[in-house]
Length: 154
Image (cartoon, rainbow, N blue to C red; front, top):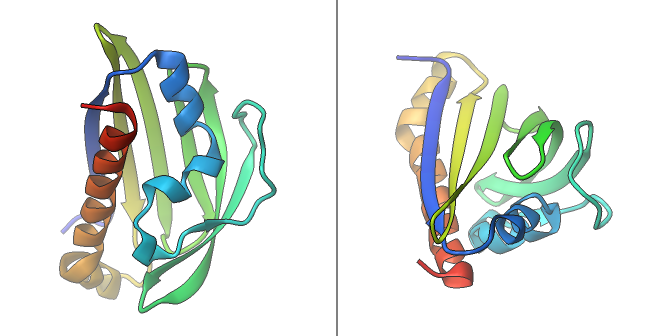
């Protein structure tokens, strides 16, 4: 069983690249695309500028039994209108590396999320992955896909 897992999702969004980029690179929109049961809240001050390497974003989230956890991510790489990467600095994962990639295609944008993650606690983390973590992440990204379709169309 691997200790570093991969989650990928690709979605076509029928909107201009700049609009899609501005939406996804703005941390103020994360609550809108996260299921309510996660109780996800951005706790960093609102930021209206452009995403930049070194940007720190803080959140609270309740992934297990409604117990709040602090989550801190750092934007580590940005190529304007092409991709950005966030990496967890504090939070529930031992490793969280999330790449957001955007490609302009006829009629809109193809967006791909690529997440490499690792859980703490060795074999207990691997068991938790099998029992609920993988399914929870897949459900979160499926929810995100539906919300983005509602916002931008199919």
